[in-house]
Length: 288
Image (tube, rainbow, N blue to C red; front, side, top):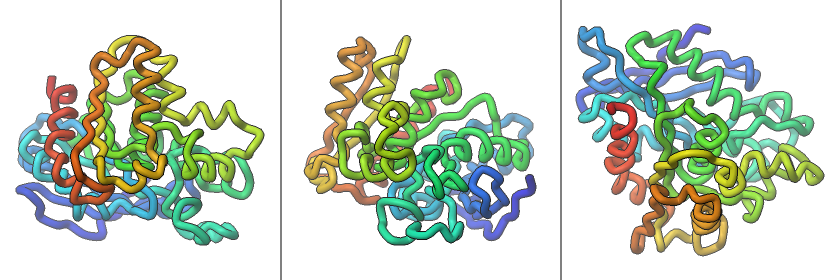
């Protein structure tokens, strides 16, 4: 599938590309951002690894690319960063624009099974299958054998669940303020009820990191940052402790690092502060 470049922007010695393509999983045009570090824009024949960054509620592929400062560390390490959108756009499903936490901008990185959302809200398949295939087909300088994943809030939920559901697909995972136990928080309950239905509790658990980690086998090296001043953390939307408790009960918590960062909130100020740490975490695995 062809990819159209709509803008090319110099950033930290590399290039930030604004791209779009026709996606079959979501039945619409999907826009995304791609940062190519300087190592990918030279004549070198070596390929660069890729970090997928998943955004949170209300966001697009632009937000973190413009405010998260991932490009700084990625440029130094020689890692490409992909910033997908968070949901399909313009499917004209009744109610898709009614609220910030469901529908447009809130795809939750699941494949909806309940009508009418099943007609295009398939962000799990888009991020894990169609986008990588499209990306690596269009950019031969990217190494498809070296992928990692990270994300923020709803995207932190996406990063954790996609990593845990696909052992070996991603070299590493980290998250900022993830919705770590969605079956037990209002955001997750609203999304899963809408996309799956009230009677599909097993399906809910299949997209809950605190449930998935109970089945994990082998080592688990995760970096999770949460701000103590995060209002959504205080409201019980994130529940990172539930994830760590489940990992501990499963005996895989040894390298699960939950860092509670004093005073930081849920914003991109928080993410930009610790972006280099998350790039370094990915680089440890991608460049080993």
